[in-house]
Structure formats: structure tokens, C-alpha cells
Figure 1 (cartoon, rainbow, N blue to C red):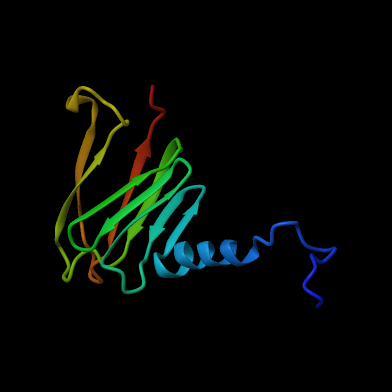
Figure 2: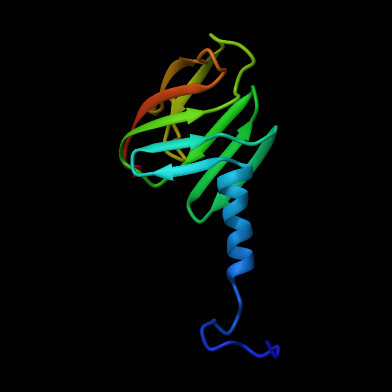
Length: 128
């Protein structure tokens, strides 16, 4: 308690910024990334852009959602509060960054559920 670095701490006390970043992405933005699922459940946030290394999440309530993750395989995606009502259709496009030919992209329609959430599963592939 004398203001000097404690023996059980690093030389640059990082816990406060780390906790703040964790609260932003887990609580405020509601971003949860696990092995086979991506969930975005923002807490009263209309729009945000979140980047962490090669991960990227862009969200604009009711308009657009974009995510970039370094994953391969089937991934379940759930985005809360995308629509005010059930049955609003969104175009889901899966493409590799820098695809010169739009024909290389795969697209399908996903509809909002009774709570206005957008839920779908997508097959992600390795990009060249």
C-alpha cells in the first residue's frame, strides 16, 4: 500500500484495461465467440464496430451484421435485436475477403425469429 509495484503484479498494471475490454465485448456488445458458435446480444447498443486481431464484428441494429473470424467448419450464428418483428428477411453472404468474383460468394436468406433475432448456421471455408 505504499505505491510501489507489488511483488504479485506485473511491472505495468494491466488488469483495469483488461477488465474494461472484457466488459465492453462481453456485456455491452454481447459478443460471445466459442468453437462452433458466434453470438451477438448487445445491451442497448444500436451500432458498433469491434476489432480484436483478426476478429471483427460490425453490427447495426435492423440493418446489417458482419463478422470475420479465422474459422473453418459449421458455425452457428445468433444476433439478437436485428428486427422489431418476426419474419424479416436478411441476405447472408459468406465470402473470402478480397474475392474478385462475386460468384465465389455463397448467399442465402435468413429470417428473424419471434424475438427479432437472426439465427442461422453457416459453413465457413479456408480462404486462399
